[in-house]
Image (cartoon, rainbow, N blue to C red; front, side, top):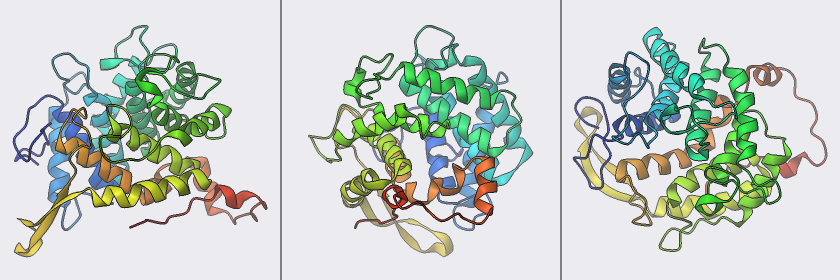
Length: 345
């Protein structure tokens, strides 16, 4: 973390470039929030507070967060996602104001199709990857109770848009259509977002999960596609939400190798009370993973936090009311869809 509270895109252990700084800061903040940390936390509170403050102060008067020179990165939806989660955990009015301004940009940028394009621009280009970050931000804002009008309607539209970028026969999602761009490796992103938008039981979600059965976690030169960590980030969440044997199998294959491939530097920094503590990070399994150690480490961290991060967050308000009621006896075949929390080490 920089002195100003931000994190930069970097390929090394320090320094970095300013391009994508709101995105890196948002991703890092999400890791802390997913761990249950807030500005009031004893150990990490100052870190969280500085990150939130930096995002709020960096936001433009129009609600936008600055992108790189070409605008082809995800700073705005990722920063919005982080602020929405931060507001949901703190209920601080200043954070709410910033999150709602940012959410307005996302809502206004949604295409008639239900998808989004880079920079939340109105166009005919429907980008599955960019849409995925907008969907995550949208769901976080909805769950946090932001006051923006039209969030639920936007979620419903997004389901239609996501389906347009899915091959209905194979279940595979493409990049800017249903033609399988990026080798179909964005299927995890599309499937997760169908789940987040409220279509977990939809046939499109089920065919997406079926297609994902062929995806493997193989850390090294044989890792899937050009952006394996990015694809695994989505696959892990989609399979977790899908539950059953699909999740159990993936859980066994990814958790231990992911932990094993973390680089740990013993007693590297001073922690609370002056005690020296270890730090850990992930380098990419492939050189084609483009954004450096902060990016790699945040996505890997969020993958490992899936076990507890989403259990409360991804209930809808109606689901919460149902959860408070006495549970009905499960059907005989419900066990096959249970989510087992079993970290393989």
